[in-house]
Image (cartoon, rainbow, N blue to C red; front, side, top):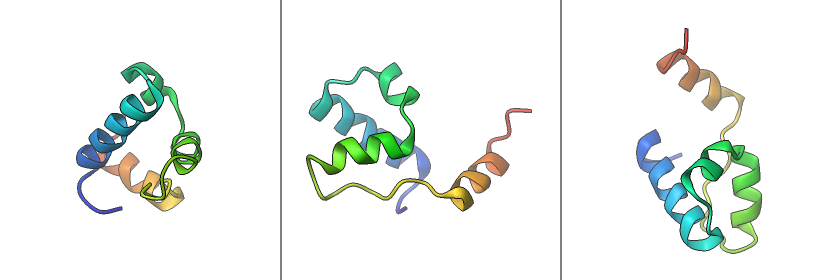
Length: 65
């Protein structure tokens, strides 16, 4: 995934809003796979869904504990 997490999230949130009419809460409740599946039906310019390694790295960077 290129760019920072926040840049990628902002870009995907904008796509979800413009293309799908999703409100922010709908975007944040969707799984990465759900969003990728829906957007792939509309465009080929969708970043791949986060994998287990990506999620583990993010969990280390942003612990909820």
